[in-house]
Image (cartoon, rainbow, N blue to C red; front, side):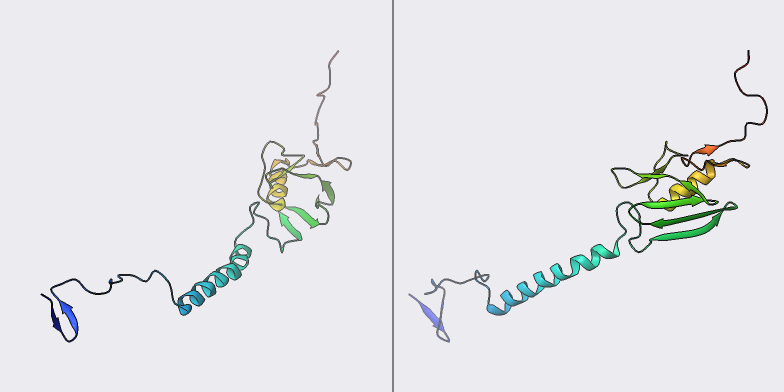
Length: 149
């Protein structure tokens, strides 16, 4: 026996299956999903550009010129960094991981060319300067430190 209230069967099996969730989405839901995906794709470059690069270099930085510990350090990015300390060239090398090292301090690497240059200045003792030829240190010997007979 089947009883109905307001045209809907009560107490028995319903004539049509009841859907608890929509298996198919509406067109509006599809458009919302597509819009959300397009928005995410459009924002990825903006978010990526706002984050620092892996090596710590600022893509907008193509030069520096400052006095650090009493020495004038200058650098300009061309094909690579052209760096001078007190007008003498300092050779920097880029490592495979994107960090930098100098010929003066080649045991450590630094995230930026500027930091590598500052570290080279830190290694220079007072009175020492970079050699004109290869960007390594010329240190005053101050006495007879050669081979003795």
